[in-house]
Image (tube, rainbow, N blue to C red; front, side, top):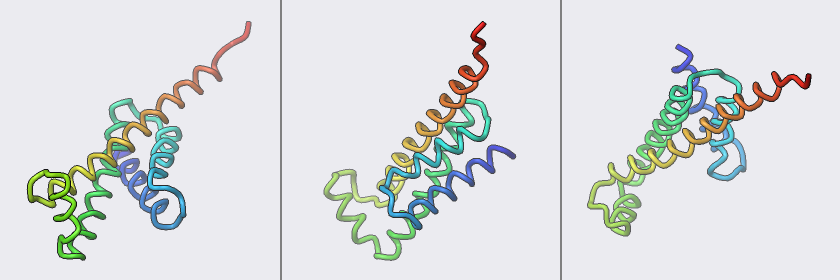
Length: 125
């Protein structure tokens, strides 16, 4: 249950930061790291929840934008990149890149949490 809540929270905060602030595109990574810092999970669960939250969000947003302009922009980008003629592949690549940034930011938050615990439990005797 915690995994699903963290995944949803990652997607929600990533969306809110992107829509309601003037911060750069990579600002969702800060929210992913902050969530991983605050919520204790295993290392793999932390990465996967961070990855899935933004991966699914970016796929959904890219698909909505792609359908709204009749696939014109995605077809041009696909032809420039030379990855075939499938806009679906471009959407998946977009989601994968966002998911990797978010997952790695979540792992960073996990390690910051581990470091903070180690520093706070250090005894100077």
